[in-house]
Image (cartoon, rainbow, N blue to C red; front, side):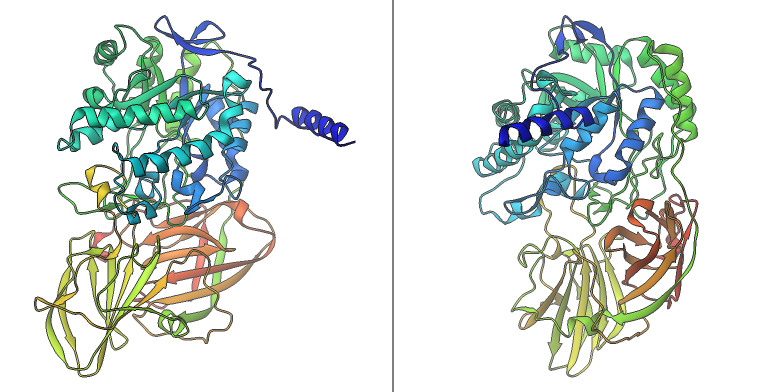
Length: 623
């Protein structure tokens, strides 16, 4: 009986397209200077889309949009920390974490799949994809030939391989290539203190771990064309990121690939990333279409990074670092000025690329799918407000003589309130060199200032009276995801708190506010104090659902939950002034919204959803 049920289930899965044979139906290889599909040369026309940045109900629509743009493949990063949600706790099923299902849907839509598992991803994602708690392991050093780190990588790679091993083209699936490490040449260039042979030993070990895990498809590396010396790995095809000069591309690949192709730009940028407090980056549709035509004419394979960016929901956004700026947190929208917008719309750039593809490719390009419904939500009344300080009065703090980082408190994301009572008055300069990243300062329940790593403000004048209380609410705005500074990624307050140069020790209380789920206000009294952090709550009813964009223009800084889902951060400085609210998170009838507003300089009574997003309005005058 059990055998007959199993056989019936297998047949049903095959009919529904949710299972693959473990026998190869097609072949894919790199040989004779070409990508070969079923033994015939093929040009890869790929687009990057991260399943973790798109709600699962929208995966198929976005993949159809890619197909209709003329692409034949999709590439995706896999973010280690999105699947290992706590040490030793793995999730490949909930929400939009089911990578196996994503790959199967891509196959059903006629797309080959390229996987980029890292373990380091960058991608403007929190800590570049690494779990934050790796920093807590004594002796562990990331991204180098370190046994503790490589042992951790091996566990991740094996867990991931268990999900995708049978989806490789060698087993009848659509997965044709896998990347070994990611942009490692950039890291090598920034770490000249480490011998090149040590770097090479590490990157070779990552490739071997992928092979040992049962990934038997071709591998590639991805680097800027001037960084191949450090980033190339023996046995993996070198590809060049952002290389528009085809002559240069071929020369550098030939040098590291035995004097022959194939040639691929694994990151062809049709747009660019964006940071809070910096202008939105744009590129012209014409220039992107012209470069696409050059690649098509010269049979250069490419992968648009990004073809569809999606959204940094929750606390998934990372941060960049430069010598000019201490930290550059990435905005919630990952629109990227990509051909397919954050909400899945066909842009002018999309149509220009599609027209170009139709001139060169020999296969049929389908019609553009219909745009998903968009709705406008009238003003939602915020019927309840609760002071954050009232909420923490029911919490038990962690006590210590000195301040502790998020990591020391065993907290990854969100906020920590640091509190200290003073028996004697003190006045002068408050300095916190290690503010990570944004802090609001209060004395006796009144906001007196702001410390802000983004604007390199780590000090202010303070006046604490006799028997006074100092509170510092600190927000982690995303761990650095790129460059050597990724090694220094602790959050909260990571240095002594000093007043007039003297360290303030003794009896610090630290209230952990990870905001990993929507705050429950049910048993909390209604309260509101201007300038103090506040949590608003409201309900609204819908007779139809659709995508919308919450208008945050009049708000200060904080996060928004709708029906328990964290949409991500907003900040009045821009350039992003709306938050994308996918219709699949809404329901007909009653819906609930909860907003944590940190600055609270203006009391809010309503919020609304508009039909057009605003991601390009920088307003530094409001900082």
